[in-house]
Image 1 (cartoon, helix red, strand yellow):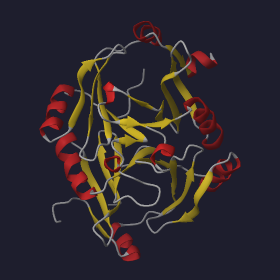
Image 2: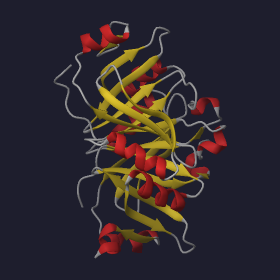
Image 3: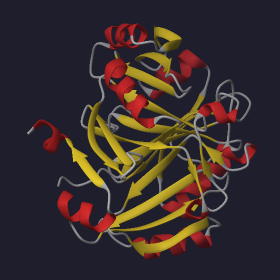
Length: 159
Length: 157
């Protein structure tokens, strides 16, 4: 087994199997591991995109989580507590077209950003937000500050 | 800043009501390393990058539009982050606890061969930390957990 990457997110759905089918069709993810119990419920599932893993889980709560509860955005007024950012090597506009055709709601159309990326944002059928990005130009920190008027730091020590 | 190393293809963007406090806390409690912060005019954080091993997260906030902090929703979260350590899981847990993490499951070795602990952070985001202590085959995992394991290898040949 290959060494696990240091950081892997898990995304929670009311219907994780349906979500996995959709993620394959809309975004081109691949299912790599699926653990199911005797009733077919998902214990743990993992998908892969561009060699990076994403965990997929069902909604759950219980003593193992303490006071926490894992829920789809529908249970939080349609909002999410975390989003995923995915860096594409190329083909951002085509990826967006494919996602839209599969029923993704495009909440930000493909657009060039001041920091040198072209990005779009999509919402999946259960309300999770996915940010796709492709580097189109290398921009220095000074250039970014000049273009945006924002402060850019590499530590909090000066704050 | 042009010589920043390449980041993995996928990284989580985590929403906090007080992102500056979160950035300081995640360094102290979990050992993340800050490499970039982009601040808005209002003291908010528009973008940041904190690395751990070969992985990274982005801490942003305060939440807007389709984003919320779990602290505002009674601990409900739509995603969680798992961090895989190479060594020192129990010490990592003690460091996190000392910094104020709420440890939900104490370090324990799981049937699938990893030692794992879970906790919530200063705004109730859920985290799990793991370290492989025994490398197991899919067959061994099925026997140990009672779950059926389907992988790309078993599906496609």
